[in-house]
Amino acid sequence: MVFKMVYAIILFALTYVLMLAFSKWRPYIALGSALIFIVTGMLPVDQIFGAIDFNVLLMIAGTMGLVQLFIDSRMPALLADMIMEKVPNVQMAAVSLSLFAGIISAFVDNVATVLMVAPIALEICKKLKTNPVPFIIAIAVSSNLQGAATLVGDTTAIMLGSYANMSFLDFIFYQGKPGIFFAVELGAIVSAIILAWLFRKEKAPVPKGAPRTPVTDYVPTVLLVGMIALLIAASFIPNKPDITNGLICVALMVVGIIYTYAKTRKSASVTGPLKAIDFETIGLLFGLFLVIGGITNMGVIDAVADLLARVSGGNLFLIYTVIVWASVLFSAFIDNIPYVATMLPVVTGLAQSLGVEPTLLYFGLLSGATLGGNCTPIGASANIAGIGILRKNGYEVKTRDFCRIGIPFTFAAVIPAYIYFWVLFR
Image (cartoon, rainbow, N blue to C red; front, side, top):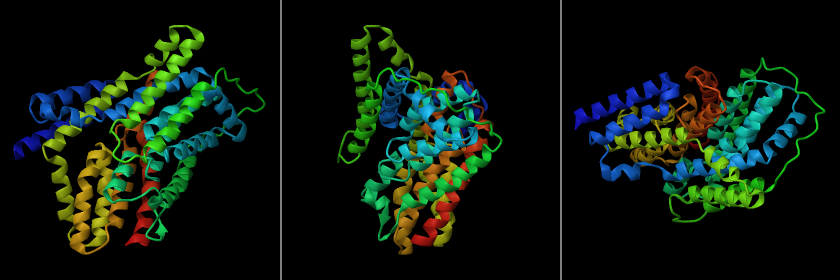
């Protein structure tokens, strides 16, 4: 068993090294590695479907199709015009877009947020004749940050809320103290300053006075707003099916396609949204889910969690520090969902052994695991989705391009939250 675990770790590490080195081939590398895990028995056939997060895949597919209708309606162009009217230069346009994405992401899944806001960024960059790559990266990392602010913002937040029996309001105020929401917003302020510094050379003025783009159809916008409302509402439904959010997104895409076809009677109204679905991004996530399922089945994540517990000893500050920064490190390379699911009982056990309330360790785990994905282009689904959008528009994102923004953003967001939680909840 130990030999198989080592083999799984080597294959996992090789998979991620290859994906980081050969960005154009990431979907095929992930799927190839997943096939090896299955063929070798490290991921049993009866666990394949359980390892795949169909909710995320359906959300991506449905939102991509719906967003294409949104783009065709010219609403992103109008929103781009409105933002450009309010900002003085390209630097502030980038910061404003990232903050805008963060606000939405506090209530909607990170991937859905990126898919909604990215078209606006692309329109702005087209009008300003500037490279959209850093804009989309900033949007993706901001979305990941704000996903931890509320109970409905991210899957890991939902997991913590369910495990610790926390309500929506507990994320705002918990045990009479300001909750994780304020820690995230503190990190958002600091990271916005970092983004402003990273874009400090983008001082080109934003042209003013241009007429606003007319919107051809408001129905796609209504469907997108409806999707946000339904996703928030669904978060309060107990014991709902795991694919509820995905079904909402796909259903609204189908409604949009049917409406557009009934209005135009053109086949493009059906084929356009379907062609907009980035199957390479979906294939990459599909493969990664299976790879993570394989190493989870081989006990790798359990072993890592146990190691963290042993290394920390009995010192609360050391345990807290290790949990936060180890979570950042691991989430930079693996999906944070299985990691958080594994670490929640470990954190509870550690708190019990020390005779302390587990809130500090819970919040430290969530912040580190959620924000660590911003370090690399494959550390979070929102990053993968953003890069997929850029690729479909003819832009290739290299690992160093992403890390140049992602790593300083991560430290700017994690450090204030790390200090905040220790001061309030130790």
